[in-house]
Image 1 (cartoon, rainbow, N blue to C red):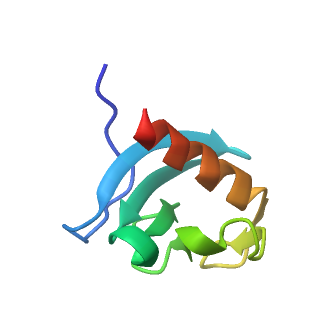
Image 2 (spheres, rainbow, N blue to C red):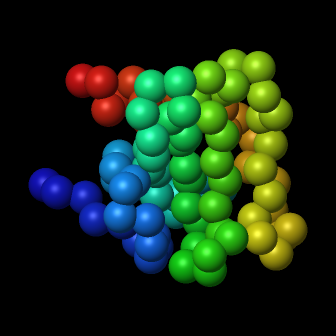
Length: 91
């Protein structure tokens, strides 16, 4: 069964990895870029700024918190989730 993103994402260079529900909200996961400049993105709404992103090289060292654009929710464990989605891409 093919997954489709829930949210509108306007970058045609991004690769859709899949979606998951986290704390009641659907996150659509993408990667963008190549090699050392690759970024992982978790979109949580249609609004342009409604996403979390981090360079893949910083996943283990960067902040592990993300806020929605309206500051209504903090996602914990984003690095772990992003790492899991990237490993799924490698399979």
